[in-house]
Length: 435
Image (cartoon, rainbow, N blue to C red; front, side, top):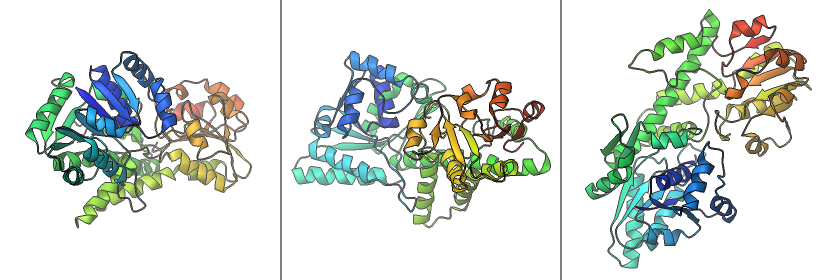
């Protein structure tokens, strides 16, 4: 099939490259000439394991191309994916302006029957709005083409996006057009397995499921983070508690880890947007408000732990390991590291930070802090280490060497990557989350 993707962020670029890998002809549209030049050479504009190699192979074999010409893409492709950003507005509502701009472009330029796929995360009712925008443009052109709108939300994890695309828990396709559902099923059929379900529904259900999915996962994280404070008070261990809860097959083990709070491009904005949608429809959102509040409080919870060991931060050298909101990505959006570093700088600490992938991104937020070449360099002369992202390379470093490099061996482990008894036996002053 011939596909077009409007937007080359995580969703559009990963999905486009993966569909090309499955043998489809894919056009990716973006408005940034500098970005397009890099994409054409197979250079991904963000860190995602395996993506550049996937791009290079499909560019070389002629199945993946990049263009600024959204009008031609609407004419040439049969299925048009909307994969632009939907950032949060100040009130938490999703900004759909880019989605609507793409819908206008499609309506002004499509020829013949087209399937228009909302793959961006959008609130309920967006498919109907996109359908109206396209219909208005077709009416103005005095043509009688049909556009079937499909809601096909993504469930890709940054850092494992290619695997998640090729091995999905579920593929969700929602539309009021039976023909469009049949064609989308054919497109995704190579991914279908007994445990990889292609689920058909209508637009409204598909739009609701995406937000409900992320809202529930965020709720699990905030529940564990809230419970972690009780564990600290009474001498419990949140990792043991979480493991036991996860053994209940009604709950499952994923997303039952306490830490420094969730961040990234999905959970924060999707929880906010779901709250806004519920309140617009006069539905209370008490639980989701609490989920959001717990997460914001959790991001601030490591700072008091540091202050217990280093009461006066003025001029103190604080090492930070991990800047991305999670490992295997360079994404720093809503990352707990931003909250912590801001708190420390307000008390005149000297921050030296290391992250395997996210330092260039964080320089845009904190251009004046110090960035280290590797984890050990980050520790030289440090008065404390704060761990904010659970990169694997941090787990088995030489702890005696770590201790020898630091001025004072203080570790605040915001991701519970070390065992408290071991660290204390090695002579570290150590604090973690919920343990």
